[in-house]
Length: 52
Image (tube, rainbow, N blue to C red; front, side, top):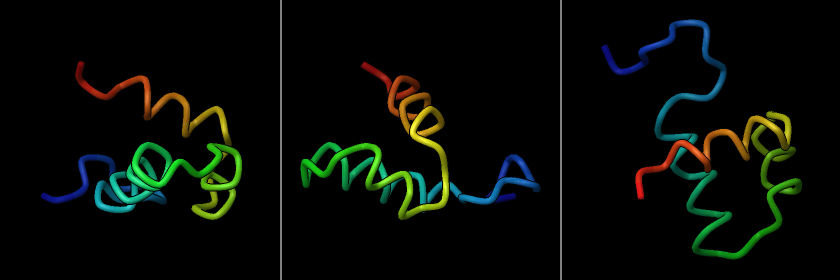
């Protein structure tokens, strides 16, 4: 099963792409989150869950 949460709107690969855009490309969290259809709060939560 690729998606651990069947109701999730953004699959893991989408989340990874979003995080990459923020961390590697230096794009603003708010802008990237809106582009992916999630709240800034959700984007920050996903960033905080990264290991390390």
